[in-house]
Figure 1 (cartoon, rainbow, N blue to C red):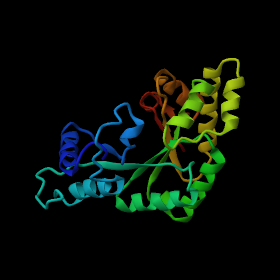
Figure 2 (cartoon, one colour):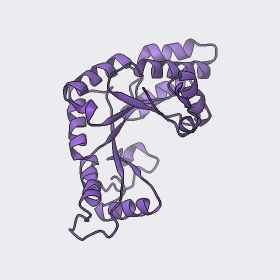
Figure 3 (cartoon, rainbow, N blue to C red):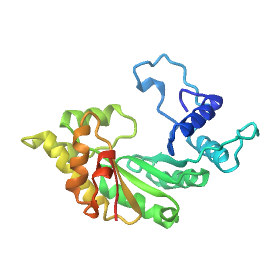
Figure 4 (cartoon, helix red, strand yellow):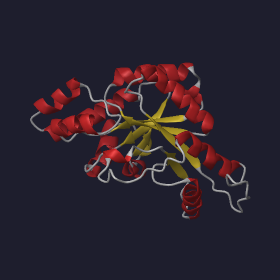
Length: 238
C-alpha cells in the first residue's frame, strides 16, 4: 500500500493470479522514513483493511472497484499481519477482528519472543471467537547475536524482545547457536497455545537454519518427514 495506488494494486493482483500465486499477505507497509530512501513520497491509497476488501471483492464478486467485470477473477487465499507483543495490547485483538471481517483468512504475526504476552493475546482472540475463523501463524526467528537483537528492537518497527532473551544470547559461548536453540524452544511453547495453527519462521540472513529449526522443533513428527514444509519456512502445528 505504501508504494502503489489502487489502480496499480488491482493490476498487480491480476498479474500475480496469472502467474499462479494463490496466497496474498496484505500489508499497509512501514513508512518510507525507516528505509534507505526516506525522501520517497508514500502513496497509502489503501491500508491493509481496504486492500483485503478490494481483493475479496475482485475474487468473490468478480469486479474491479470501478464495477467493471473481471473475466477471470483471481482465486486467492487472503492473509494479513498482526503484532501481539507491542502496545496497545488490548487493542490488538480488536484490530485482528476488523481484518478478519475484511476478508483475512490467515494471519502472520510479527516476531514472538515474549510468550506470556502472546498467550494473553490468544486468550482474547479465543474469547472473540476469532480462532475458529482464521488461521494464526506465530512469527518466530533465530537471533544471530545480542547486538543484532538490540538493533532489531531499536530500529525495526513493532519488534519487542525482552531483556532476558537478549541476555541469554549474550552470555552464551556460541550466540548464534543459542539463538537457534531459543527459536526452537519458542516453537515448542507456542504449539501448546490453543488457537495457533502454525508457525512462520523468519530467518533474515540465516535462511540455512530454517529447515533445521522446523525439524528439530519436532512439530512435523506426526506429519511424515515434513521435508517439503520445512524447506518453505512454515509448519502447521497439531
